[in-house]
Structure formats: structure tokens, C-alpha cells
Length: 380
Image (cartoon, rainbow, N blue to C red):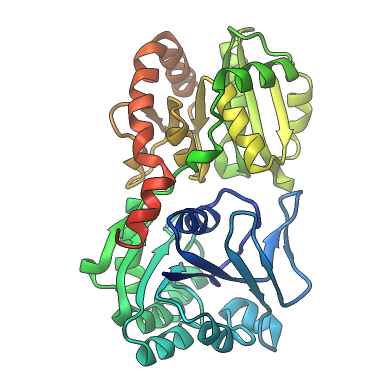
């Protein structure tokens, strides 16, 4: 079967462990022929957004083909509306049996709809990563971009959709309220972790990372990370560790600071128990997870939430309405996120009851493996 993944609503970063990378990987493993059609927008090693030079095609290391399309002229406008050069031609060339669209917020859904009218046997699935926290935050986005422009383009695709997945419960509601998609096609599909990225010899990796960072093997290690802006509340976590003041508790940070948070580096550099690694590739992040005892994300959501659960880490998360899907069986603790005393108490509770939380986390992990998620994504 030929599957085409459309990554035209936002960015596509080669060799990452985002859903846009891992679903195609597992669809190849299932025996399908897979092509990803993506924009030129990506991120560099410093975690900054950038544009590739122009149209290109290449084979990804995981066995799928990638086609990068430039924006139509005028580029400034079509970077926003997301119209692409030669998209119709490439889609006709690929002749998919299944199309999986990563988000439905791009102008060229009209081209997809026209293609599907000519090829009614093609099955179409889509997902949504937007919600009321990471999108629709200002007046233009909340009152114009999503409920008018992107709703218009999402509705073009709606008649052909078998399923449109929200990757969190909140993102399911976003599809209903912002895009007015039919409730019967909306379903929850979690993000997760690439099974194959989890090292087979976890103890050897754990030992190696801890030796590299000069962390005693029996000390407690907490992992956090992502794109670290003010809303991630990393500054609250750092203040919490100062309050805990336990020489046997360490923090590993995988990610880059936004300019407004760069000031934190000074306090990090002065604390030998905090190990800031900066930008890390997917393998490095995974190895750090395996070296950790628990994860802590006291701010906004990132894909590291589901990855941590999938790896089997007990975790502490900021409580957001309709973001409780990471709590499978009491494998985590929710906090308000901006209260140092509450966070300190929660970390201490998890450490003092570690055997309980760890056993729960190991059971919960099985629901967040991409080997299973990838099947559901295309109705198998």
C-alpha cells in the first residue's frame, strides 16, 4: 500500500522523534511504501526556525521518501497561508492509497480535496496538534486565523476524512469548536515513543550517562526539557530544587532556552547538581531518559510528556484541563506548576514512594508505543 504523509501545515525536522517522523517510519516497517511531502520550514541544531534552500527530494534513513516543496509567490503571504509550488503535480505522481495529513490548517487542502474527488477510493486520515494553549492565543489567531481561515480549509477536507485525530483530548475539542468538524470523525490518538529508540541494554546506558555527567549511580535523577520558555516553568523547577537542597537529587535539562530565559544559565552553571545539555538529538534525549528516575514538566505540554510515559518514567506534570491522558493508572502526579512548595512536596512524595510510582509507570508505558499507535492511525 502507498501512504503519503502531508507535513504542509508547519515544520518537518529530519531525524527527529516527532509524530511526523515516527508514523512514517512504522508505516514502512508495516510493509508500506511511504512518501512525506513537507514544507521547507525546519529547525537547526540550535533549535531556531529556518528555511531550507529550495525544492529537494531524498530518502530518509528510516526508509521513506521525502519531498520538500517551496512556498508559492508571494512567499511572504503563502508562508502564512501555506500554498506550495507543484504540490498538485507531486500528489498526482505519488498515487497514494492512503493520505495522512499532519494537521488540516493549510491552504492547499483545496488541492487535496480536488485530488480525492478524482480518486474516491483513497482513504484519508488527519490529526491536529493545535489547542487553546499553543494556538489561538491572541485576537487574530483566536478570532480570525483559526475560526475563519483554517476552518474554511479544514472543511474542504472534512467530507473525505475517515478520522481526524486530536493528539490530546483538548486537541479533539479544538477540532470541534474551532473548525466545526463532525464529532463522529474526531478521535483521540496519543503521541508516544519510538519503541526502537529505547535502548535494549538500559542499565549500560544509564551507567554510561551518569558516569559522563559525574552523577553517582544511586542518586536520584529528574529529567526535564523541551523548548524552554517562560511557560515551561523551568525556573520554578530550579527554585524548587534549591528549596529541596538535597545533594543526592540531580536535574538533567535537554533543550534550548528562549532569549527571555537565558538568564537561568548563570544559576545552572553554579550548581553542580544541575546538568544542562542544551539541544540534544533524539538518541541523546532517549539516553538521558533511561538514565533518569523520573521526569518533571511543570509547564506547557511538549512531546517529551508522552515520550517519558512511554519509556516508563514516573512523572510530574502541570495540570491542564483535558491533558490528563498521561495519567493511565496513577503513574504520575499533577501540580499547578507555579507553586514551589507544592512542586517540592510532589517531588519528595514521588521519591519517598518511588517503588509504587515506578511499578505503575512500567505498566502505563505500553499505551504510548508507536508500534501500536501507527496501526490505529491508518485504521488497522
